[in-house]
Amino acid sequence: MINFLDLKAINNQYQQELKEACARVIDSGWYIMGNELTQFETEFAAYCGTKHAVGVANGLDALILTLRAWKELGKLNSGDEVIVQANTYIASVLAITENDLVPVLVEPNLGSYNLDPETVIAAITPKTKAILPVHLYGQLSPMPEIMAIAKEHNLLVLEDCAQSHGAEINGKRAGNWGDAAGFSFYPGKNLGALGDAGAITTNNDELAQTLKAIRNYGSHKKYENLYQGVNSRLDEIQAAMLRVKLHYLDGETARRQHIAQTYRANIFNPLIMLPQVNEELAHVWHLFVVRCAQREVLQQFLSSRGIQTLIHYPIPPHQQQAYSHYADLQLPLTELIHQQVLSIPLDPTMKDENIAKVIAALNEFVA
Ligand SMILES: *Cc1c(COP(=O)(O)O)cnc(C)c1O
Image (cartoon, rainbow, N blue to C red; front, side):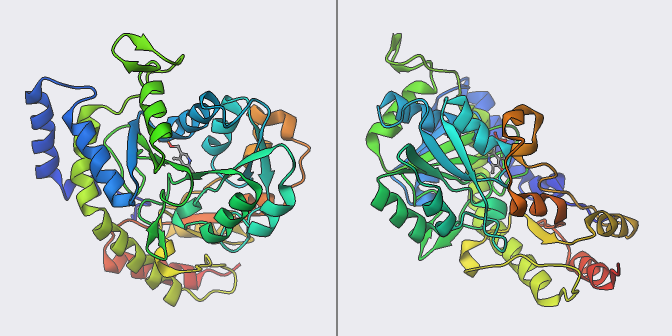
């Protein structure tokens, strides 16, 4: 059996260090908002190249609380429009609607699955106040173009970096392009905790300070509350796990890039469409997503060869029950993507012989 992702094998590589870090937190007697979090925030900001990183409970909160902070700071108001690609994971859209903002779902670029600058321009109205580019599957959106559009139209940019830790264009990393960025450290992400965790990166001091208050009951000072905040803190134990794993992130990314490169160089099957890559370093391969008109048949065929695959994602946000008022939206590219995508195994601990087996199976597939 070739697993889609073997989390146990990934974390086993660092077992000794993870256990030592765990023991360090247990022995410290301090479990929330302490030294591990402060250190991780400093180290993760340095990794992204930003001035600040603010730890929160998960990736969804990272997005929700950033939009919320911009509302508190008077930069956004209820009813403002936020442009986002329609094929994203639902969390990006939830962050918008949770803040009483209006998601404007636009068709993605069919090759990269990311925002298309032309489509973004066409979607701008007087009510547009922000763009939320999702660096889906690990590939950085065309950020130079998106930032130029944002500048021209005076829009905020919130990057959804949940799948793109370390991706870069011109030496500038995911999380350092927009006004702010939300990261997830869900266990299966490229930088994964051993539980839930997330962070916001930004170069803006005021935003970072506001977020630090909002994540902790809206309190900027003990027992004094500036905002009606929430409890969304990144635990010491998870910060300690992340500090260990951050150390190995670039090594794991290099391995992911090598596997993806091997797939791209060796899968030749006219029935299978490979992902388009604009720049090698811009893609950190959270997922290797192919498209196939007979997706279900392909998935069954691979399963019969012992190869586990997943679908990211089977139903687009506008067709979810939760957003039934968007059911009439016509988004043919997005719908096509959801009918055809299939994610094949891509695990940094994957053995070369298993990479070869996946390639052979994909090349042997016939309709
Ligand atoms: C995983 C993910 C999130 C949410 O992260 P959680 O930590 O699970 O809350 C948001 N956006 C995208 C694109 C994701 O893949």
